[in-house]
Length: 461
Ligand SMILES: Cc1ncc(COP(=O)(O)O)c(C=O)c1O
Image 1: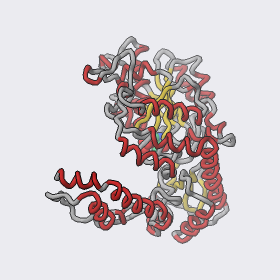
Image 2: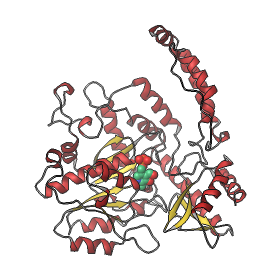
Image 3: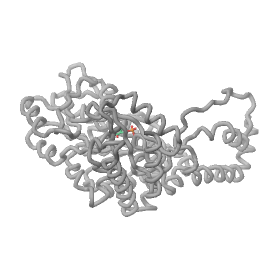
Image 4: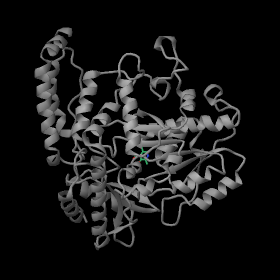
């Protein structure tokens, strides 16, 4: 077996050339691939006794598996909130595997310092003040988890308890207030032992997914003695609505709560002077979540968590051990995030930020929003569909223009749409109405795609 590995090592340049050929073919022909694969017969699984080497494995994979991979990184995949990888981020990502650094600490390489530098660049991109620190995690779900873990630690401290040592046994129930939180907030409370029931949904403004500030203030006033957590939403998945972060931030002066802002993709509004107002006040947050594999357009999986309370973060995540060589006085990455060993996740982000800069991201965000608005306008004037909310940023939330709309009707419509392989959209339910979402978050998406998207929609009615 080792013999095959050694042969591969000797032939690595050749093997990598084959990979480049396969990869550029996939990358360049993205637009010709089916945007989603609805069914695929998997080849028979077996672990062979004798390996066939990297080159033959690539050939086998290309023949039997690669056809089943979708063009989800392409321009017309509008499901969920899915970014594509920019060319420079792919360069960085490929190198991550070659360098294979373990960024759990900064002891043996500058990889950790590059992560710090990347976080600083991102603070510049999002106009975050200097007193935030941050780290890369695998996605916004984990960033929400890390933010809420610190929030839990802070609330416990208000009761004179250190949950990181004592657990939650002596704590009164923790309250989390939010208007329209993402499902990952519920997941995080479950993972943190706070429990999903801790989330107290405060009503939103009429026909909006933005929290009603008066109702939030009322609740805080009535529960003044109990410190709590507020999760503000900067970009909801259905209609990309934004809580009034300035108003919530001002409430911090009067009431005791930890403010976590989930800005998984809405945070990118900060990149454009046209939409920056939407995230005004994000700086009031104690902790912030922003995804990188969404609108930064780096490969999965990657997100950032930002905090103003690094010390609390270390209390929760510290992983000190003699063999790891860290120290409480000088915490390192393994003291900041759930993982111990960590991928060099910052590098693709570093490459793309360096390659395209602030202007590149401003253009990307503005282009996606412009296209979402154009689709919104088409829907608004069509007799087949109706918009369920104004298009505020990059998501169009709409439904069929029928008197009665059922989940089954939307399911069947989406099956017809997605089976064409030209565009991919996903369902939702907005204010009780079964609906469709189209999310624009890929650097490749251009004017030419709108026509294809529209024709596919009409053909599916
Ligand atoms: C607002 C918000 N928060 C959190 C998440 C979870 O993101 P991830 O899939 O990166 O964990 C999403 C994903 O769409 C989101 O839109």
